[in-house]
Length: 352
Image (cartoon, rainbow, N blue to C red; front, top):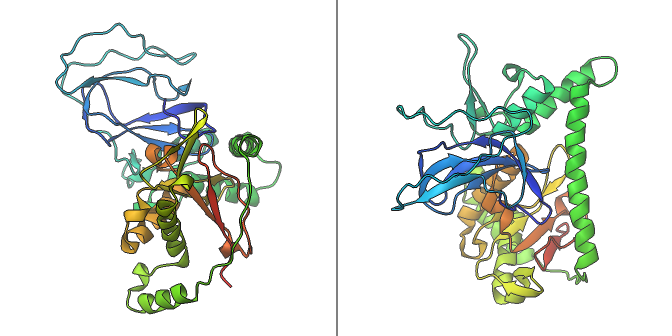
């Protein structure tokens, strides 16, 4: 179970996207893990063949627990007596069949829900499917806002809210369960922020930057672009932070084991507010080397997937400096809290 942030101490395997016998390569999505904040797609960092799944779906385990056994490319298969982890009350998994392999795993973006007789196939993220089952929500009645109409966790929670608002009486137990999930996420955020303020010496420097030249360039540039390809000021700010971090490497890296470790790569974490409440700060990788034409769609994609509960493990585990921007909300200044184990955070207020 990988660590997907300083505030994570355990996670639940929601879905396996591979099975024993499958070949995998570096960067493949092999599983979906649910934390207190979101469902995260887990990438693998070594190629090989999956020998055994050790943690069944639906099982919560601490960070550091082995999830599967992988045979590296070129390694001879040798049976190892490893006992798979069985969740309380769960039957042992059946032996791996030696017959032809089953159908390939569903898409990493959203798995297709088996259709009702004669009905269309429903695209839904693993976390949304699990939440819908917990809350008793019929996915056929939910409108998806994700890529290709895929249903996200936010879509399921929005559907539940509409039912509760329309119906009389107190909220059902299922809605209380959803509220408990949100409370757990807020508690995790609060615990990390409290730890950060307690353990990291914070001091704040504020300066006013003249953006008139940048905004004039942006206005002229956007007139040349189609509406869908236009840039927003936030993209310039994120890029500027990455370039500044390259010039001042003491601000870009991690404080671990009692010392600072600078990062050669510049992965900018972007604070994203979640529609159901809460905050998450996944990374856009190598921003200092990324053209604005690539950074704009990368930012849009990251925000959409963060709010849909479809982030990747690498996006949560390696931000080297974080940006938070509350200017669109009317704030003049943002005094942020450093996201451990990073050593700096940049806050932007509104452009005046």
